[in-house]
Image (cartoon, rainbow, N blue to C red; front, side, top):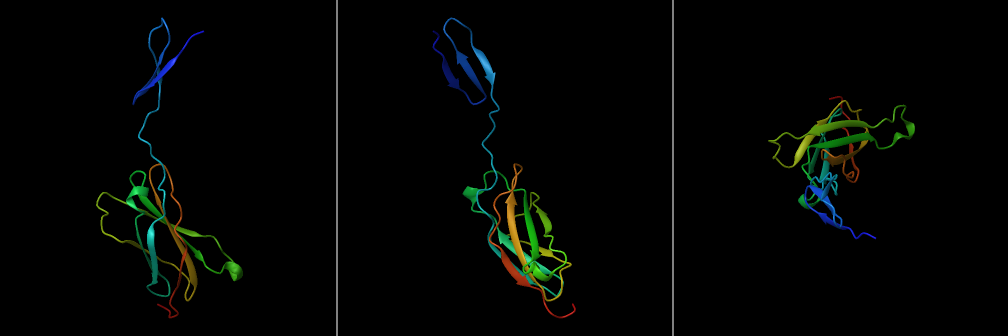
Length: 146
């Protein structure tokens, strides 16, 4: 019976067996990256007019980034879709460039319906994928025709 010893190195595994040579076993050893572990913080939405609203947020806590955040997804939908004909959520992607350091982040969502209540959520994403959604925030567009 043979006794085997496994030694883990940063780039590969090595298998040592009695009276044999060393055989490297390939290991996909990359830094441990996952999706963000928390949603964006302090999401706020303010109606700008009867057809648009401003969405602001802060990044997830830094210890929950789990890699570089490269985008945010903003999804908005009618808050009361019971009497609507089209209830499909709408989405906007806010891509970060290397200079996106002004906090809070913000974007404008437009082409909204007049005097209508919307539910807005935001998530952060890394190159691995999407993190969790923020708690929904509601906003009602203005009543006037602007």
